[in-house]
Image 1 (cartoon, rainbow, N blue to C red):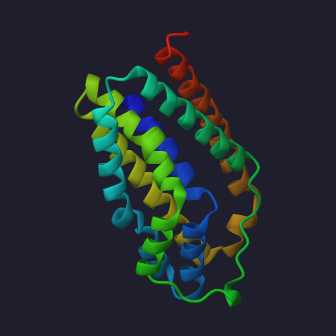
Image 2: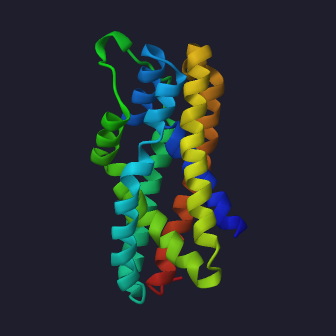
Length: 205
């Protein structure tokens, strides 16, 4: 259960703090309106991720006894997390030109998140396989993984809205960059784990 919680925290933080369209909307809404509006945009994944998770769970659960298929998924997941690690390690200060952006609503945030490929890739190659794996050992662990993921995903974005509302320069400072570097190293380690899991599935290791 502890490993499920830690993995959920790691991916929740990395997804919540990484620059992207949803984070841009959170910052823009906060600067143009107020912190509460930014927090509403941060909640968009709660609207869009449920069908993604359910669809991925239904498909992968049917394939859970096929080691070759799960090995391929682990390879794709390892490569995907490797890309996330690289992007996180090389991220620069977040810059938003508010004057060129129109006010956004939670509906717009949901649309942007639904069109973002990252939730689909994450849940299909990392999230749901993690749920299926932990489900075999402890029926509570998958729920702890999901809970910790969304608490830190939404919590980190809401925290950014709170900080940006008071200290706009936070995302351009060193502390933010240091946090992203640490998360990048942790993600790289998890990518290695997924690739090793693929070798185990293929019977190589």
